[in-house]
Image (tube, rainbow, N blue to C red; front, side, top):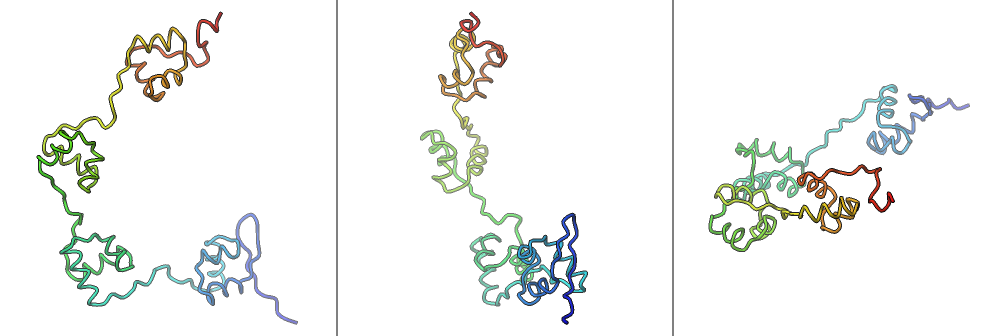
Amino acid sequence: MKNPVKKIPSTGKGRTFIDIEDIKCLYLDKRLTLRAVGERLGISRQAVHFRLKRAGISTRSNKIERPAISAKQLAKMRRLYEDERFSLNRLAKLFDTKREHILECLNNLGVQICHTNRPKFTFKYSVLFDIYVVQKQSIRSASEMLGVAQNVIIRELKRHGIKTRPQYPVIKIDRDKLYRLYVVKGMTQPSVAKIFGISTNTLRRELQRHKIKHRNKCGPRSKQRDA
């Protein structure tokens, strides 16, 4: 008669019995991770780790082995970082490794690491004035034309003392028309906002700016309904 296979009960409310030999086969023989073993057997990663530890099996380290980089690749890495101003993330993608690995290699080479490796873009006053003031391009359009981020355009405009325009058009609503639609006719806020082509939040701000009292939502819409 065969000896019964040793089984280790799971923890928690639902006590499911998992064969330790199945766990050993998946983890040791097939070299699956703890998470993958747990997904196969329908238990958590912590439960797999608990069973292996209880069975006296040490788990593998989660540390990923980093690929070896040759001396030629290190020289190329240094040239790209120092001369062509490649970022650490771009180098990591190029050499198919982690950003931390690139940082470690550069430190071993004695390369001075910049806090920010991006080149600082600067533009002349005449260029920005022509695009933003004369052509009346938006900050987004100017950033696309010059190939930089919008923050760079805002920073350069501020540096040159060029006053920025509001990114969104300033909406001015006539108080008399607003009062007639909202108070006299008793229209709802969404209906009034649709007439002016604005959002309900903007309409509420305009009502507050013109000191027009908001109606109670549960109250009547118009005098006609009261009649």
